Amino acid sequence: MKKRMNMDHKINLALQIIPKSDKQDLYTLVDKAIQVIQKSGLKYEVCPFETVMEGGYEEILDVVRNAQSACFEAGAEELLVNIKMQVRRDGDVRIEEKTGKYK
Image (tube, rainbow, N blue to C red; front, side, top):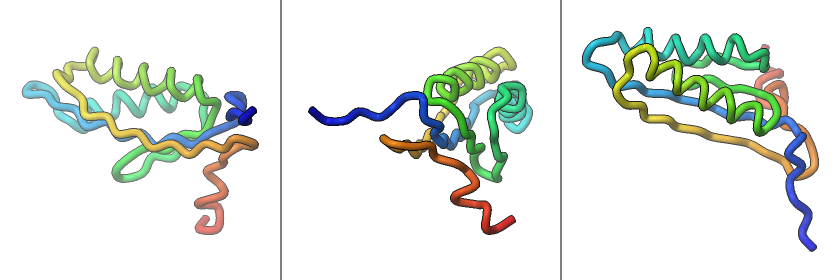
């Protein structure tokens, strides 16, 4: 029997939300998504093109859903959402692994 990924492990997820709106400033809409991430309590890094988060699989997916909702509530008519994830079957994935040596 094949071993499945443990859903309790920490993962990294990069989230890019590109909103479309004729009435709202796009950066203001992106700020709404980032505010959701900031309030989540997850470890995160805001980058020029995306925000990277570290946390439990389901916990992060809830933040992704809430960030999208915040953009729609703020006036976005449409969203282009790009997601990249790094997961491990047998352990945590940490942001520090990838960027720690540059700090």
